[in-house]
Structures are given as C-alpha cells and as structure tokens.
Amino acid sequence: MSPFASITQSAPPSDWVERAERVLAPTYARPARVFVSGEGSTLVDEDGRRYLDMTSGVAVNALGHGSPVVADALRDAADGLIHTSNLFHTRPAARLAELLVEHSFADRVFFCNSGAESVEGAIKFAIVHGGPQRKKVVAFRGSFHGRTLGALSSTDMPAHHSTFGQATHRTFAPFNDDAAIQEVDESTCAVIVEPIQGEGGVRSADPAWLGRLRQRCSEVGALLIFDEVQTGLGRTGKLWAHEWYDVTPDIMTVAKPLAGGLPMGAVLMTEAVAASLRPGLHATTFGGGPLVASVGARVVEHIAAGEFLADVRAKASFLREQLGALRPHVAEVRGKGLLVGLRLSLPGVEHPAKAVVSTAFDLGLLLVAARDDVVRLIPALNVTREELETAVERLALTLERVASER
Image (tube, rainbow, N blue to C red):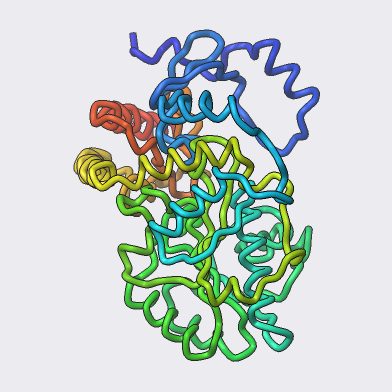
C-alpha cells in the first residue's frame, strides 16, 4: 500500500468545512480539509493527517509553523501595549523601523498591514513626489502587486481590469525587454517591478535590463519601486532580492514574512521621497502597532543574521540538485534561493499546475501554482534538508501520477 494512501482529498468534509462554506464569502476554492496545528514545515488537519508544507502560507511563515522566535516574541509583547493607533509613538514601531533602515537602502519607513497596502502607499507616495505633471505609472506584463483597487491597476490581470477598471493611469510594458525602457518618460512618476515575478511564473529580471531601467528612471526623474513583498526578507538567500542585482530602488514594498505570520506590511523609501510627504497625506489605524512591530523586530533580527542567510543559500543549492530527478516532467527550474518555480512539461494535461497542486495535496504535499504551467516551492526558510528531499520525492510521485492520468 502507498505510504500516502490514507491521505485523500475525497474523504467526506468535516462539519467545520460545511460551516465555513455557509458563512465565508466564496472567493476561494479550498480543499475539504481543516488545519488545526503545525510545527516547522508540517501542517496537521483535524483528522490527524500530516502535510509537508512547501507554501509557508505563500511565503509568509518564513520561520515555519509554531516558530519559537515568533511565539516568544508574542508572549513578551502580550504583556505590553497591543494598540495605540498612529496618533502616538511606540518603542516597537521605532525599533522595527530602525532595523529596516539599518539593513536596507532606506532612510524612512511607513508601516501598514499587507502587501497590497504597501503597494497602494508606494504608488501614492510616488504620485505626490512626482507632482501634478507626473501621473503615469509603468508596470510589467506578468506582474502581480495585489488585489486592492490601486494595486490591481498595476497587476497584469486583464480579466480583473475588465471587471473593476483601472483606478489610476497605468502602462504595461514587456518584462525583460528594452522596449519597456522607452515607456519611461518625463510624465512617469514611478516604475514598479518585481525583481522576481512570483505569481507571474517565477520569472527573474535580467540584471543588465534592471540596471538600464534604473538608469532610465534616474535620467527622467521617475522613481523606481521594487515590489519585494514575496522576495524580500531572506527568501532568495539575501535579505533583499535586489541585492543580487546590485541595483537600488527609491521605494520598496515589504510584507509577507515581516511579522512571522501576523499581518504587517511596510513601505521603505529614501529621504528624498519622504521629503515630499506631510502629515495627513496617508494614514493607517493599525499599521506598525506595538504587538506586531515587536514580533517583526525579532523576525528581522533573526533572518538578517549572516549565518541564517548563508544556510538559506546552502539549502537552495541542495534543493536544486534534488530537483534534477523531476525530468522530463519539469522543463525548467526557475527562481532564486527558496523561491523556486517549476515549469511543467505534461503534454495533454489541461491546466497542469492546478492538476499537480491538487494531486500533490492528495499525497500530503502542499504546493502553490504560479500561472497555468508553473508550480512554486516556497518553503519555510528554516526547512530541513530531509524535508526538502521528502518534498521532491512526493513531487516526483505526483508528476508521474498526473502524467499517467492524462
């Protein structure tokens, strides 16, 4: 009998699944399982089935489930202030901002609650900095910057644009193509780009192209925004993905792993950008609250340590070696560090990424899709080599099963 025979998505849904489906908005298609606990890279459902999590909450749980770093920080923070609003200063927000400035290009930080909010703030700050004659924002094909209305306007999802329209003027240019550089002109307030497109198929920017984009922005006075919501804070083996490119932005958006699983985002910016802002121009009630900021400071201190990032790079190399076993069903391995995209080669399989994610779930492996023919492995940064080996073994079995059923 297969060691995964007891793990099946076809089992009857629990009472909690039925209850959830009755009251939650129908914006997700979830499997009929309810997770109740987790440790490290393992999630456990209410029936005791264990799943190897290679999603880390879509790159959020950088230190895994049940992280002692996060748990200890939460316990310590719970004895202090929980919320004051941004009408007042608190020590945790100041400390976290200091850490982010110390470990980046930035001089100033604005805190918010999510990646989409960080993009909203970054674009607003760029528009203010650019002045009344600069309203154009250049984004890229294959991009993903969030689903709030302003962020969605910069996300390459035409079907959603037809539903919601575009809140501000956007120009979508080809990614990794010099034709895009010509779109950046004196009417442009900002260019927003992901160093590695996560949702768009784990496509990495060409270093030389990104350098030319930086140069063009400087020539015309446009701001360069790096969206590092998914790639930032150690995901690629360096603290920020753009460090691999030796290109510095004017603004950077950060979120997913920032508070170890608690909702938190940030906009990092230079002093020149911050000088354009004034009180009342943009605000948030919860952003940078003392509890989440306390946890965020511990997470940043932990991830920014040189030995931690070196370990991420070593495990990333190990994972790439293991992935060689997945040929011929994997045509290309993309990404950097522990942000890995596998472009599938499964002729005759309709929606291959969806099929692989579903079948892997049946076999106790959690993956996440990125476009129709790419699946992502984005494990916790402290995943073990043994867990990575097991993930590749289960993925190999998944691919064989999907290929045989086409």
